[in-house]
Length: 76
Image (tube, rainbow, N blue to C red):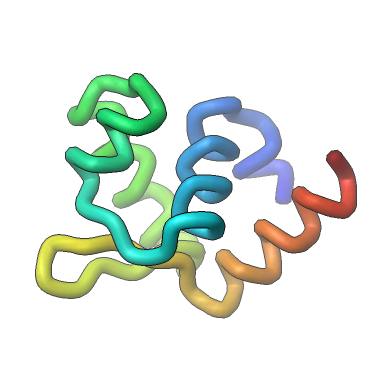
């Protein structure tokens, strides 16, 4: 949780994937007004921790990512 909660951009990426489902990195960048290279870096860091997964250019939360999103909602 600290990995996500310690960075506002990571939090926003998890929230947007939780609410919108599968999205391309560029779409996330556009919605959240975060530079695309930053979003791609965030997604790859989160993929290493099994929070997100990429399939055919779109990203979604994994089971672990969904659990983290639920926890974030509780803490909000």
